[in-house]
Amino acid sequence: MLGAQILQKGESMFNDNTDPMLDTNMVDRLEQKVHMMEELGIDDPITFSSRTLIQATFPHSKKHADEVGTLVLHNGNLTITMYSRNGLPYGHYPRLIMCWLTKEAIRRNAVLPIDQARVIPLGDSLNQFFAELGISHGKYVSGQTKRVDGRQIKAIQEHLHRLFNTVISIDQTRKVDTRNGKATVQSMINTVVATEAFYWWEAHDELPYAYVELSVEFFRELIDGAVPLDTVHLAHLKRYPLAIDLYCWATYRISYQQHDTHLTWQQLKAQLGTGYPNTPQGMRNFKKKAKKAIEQVKKAWPEAGIELWDNGVKLVGHTPAVTKKDIPINPDLPPQF
Image (cartoon, rainbow, N blue to C red):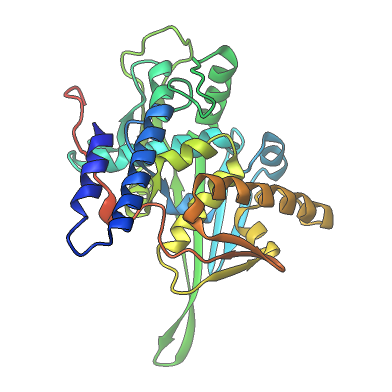
């Protein structure tokens, strides 16, 4: 049981020089985490997001996705463009699907050649696939267990189709020194999410083999740019796309920041406010949603260190939700894969 492993790991950290009160507090926190995992039906405490999809987030709603069409985001010297001929992915489903795909990519990459590793099984049935994502089976925060219904199947069908047809372009402009002075260098990468996929949509049917074949470039981006997340935190946020984005951004930023980060509302909107109009009303709507998302993240992750300041948000935390040394990768795969 991973819960027992978590407690054992915590106990192994104690020694004779440790403050007994700190020992007690740590044990309490570990026991609380194990209890929450059991309540939520979570087996693995660690999942992952992708650095690229933290830098360029999907729209939050279908309205935003349909209005945006092609998404263009500017982040420092990067310009990230996303397009899908079926419409951009939106909402919480593609964010959770990407977390699951990233985790599977890491797991498979540990034991398989890349051409096999990037072919990711989607489960023997849609119900099993959703259960692995923590969407349809297992307990929600409310303690209620749900199965897939027709509306969920239709929603997942739409989101997978949008996601697997997405093309991501990354343009970078930078200055370099040459013998003749400064020169401007531009680089560009076009990446398709998937090169092939197979699945069907009857909830009661067994799928003998459902899969998605990620492109080599996208698979490598998932591996190289994986950002570890706490599954319990994500479970509390999984219905709120802006809160998921804020959480992923915060733990990624904290992992490398040397000093507190201050972002204006305009800067935060440029980073996470996909689909909100660049109008005064658009900014007011984003601020209202962002403030609610901040409270949701702080409730799920009290140590985040996300706070409001006069003109935006400041990030004062210095420990990410999951540190790399705490990641217990288990590469074991079912024999058929």
